[in-house]
Length: 369
Image 1 (spheres, rainbow, N blue to C red):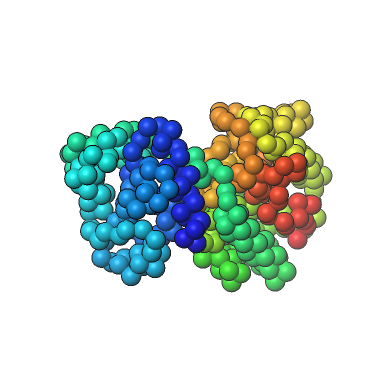
Image 2 (image 1 turned 135 degrees about the vertical axis):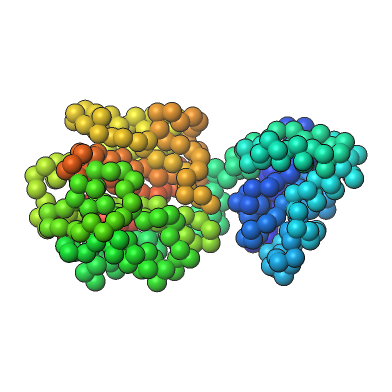
C-alpha cells in the first residue's frame, strides 16, 4: 500500500502548510503506522511540508537495527535511518538542517514534558511547536483500505459468534471465562490476528455492569448474557455487543431488550452527515429516558473505531464536532438494572450519504439460546 500511505502524507502536508509548519515530527507509533505502514515498536518520522516530490524527498523515517529488514519491506518509499534513539536522531537531523526546518510541529499529546525538553535541545535552532492531533484528524475519515480492514474485522467477529452459538458454546453451566476464551479462539479461527480488546462476557446480574470483566461466574438458565467483543484485522478493530437470554425470556427481559433495540435503531438513524455528535447521542438517549430508564443508561452512545478501539469522534453529551462521511463509529446504548441484569446492543458502522453502512451483521432480534 505505498500509494495509500503516500496519499495520506500528502494530505498531512497540506495541513502543515495551513499551519505555517515546515514539518511534523511524528512519534506516536499508530500515527507512524497510518502514514508509512510500519508495524514495529520503535520509530520516528519527520514529514516535510513541501508540496509534491520535494516533500517526499525530505521525509525521513527512523527505526533501530532490529527492524532493518522490516523497514526495508514496509517503508521502501522513504529515506530510512537506523538508530536506536529514533526520535532524538530525527530531532538532531532537524537541527542540522535548520534552514529547511524553521518551525516543526510535534505531537504534544504524546510527548511528556521531560521528553519535549530533550527534543528541544536536540532540534537546535528548529523551533518545536505544539501540534496535537494533526494525524488523528486525518484518521477520522477512513479511506477504502481502512474500511475494508474494518469490514473484515467485523465479519470475523460475526462468524465467531455464529460458530459459538451453533456449536453449543453458549449454555448454562459454563463460566464467563470459558465463553470468553472460546469466543476469542473462534475469532482467530475466522481470520482475526487477535481480539480487539479483552472480551466482555457478563451473565445474570453481572450483565448490569457495563464493563464487567469475565470471571468464574457460572451461566444459568434464565440469564441475560451480554457479550462485548471485537476482532483485530490488519491493525483495525471491530466492536460489537449482543445480549441473549439462556432459555425463555421473562417479560421484564423482553421489555428492556426491546427498549434498547429501539434506542439503538434511533441512534443508527441519527448518524447522518453534518449532524452534531451530541444530537446523535440524544436521539438514542431520549428513547430510553421517555420509557423511564434514563438513569440506567450509564455511558455515552458510542465512539470512533479504527487503529484504536476507542478514537475520535465521541458520541456523547460531552462530545464535540459533527458526523462526516466515511467516519467509522459505534452505536451502543444500554440499560442496566443493578442486581437483575442489563442489555447493550452495539454495532460498528461507516457513515455514508443517507443510511450508514452496517459492518456488524449479527441479528439484533432477541435470541433465546
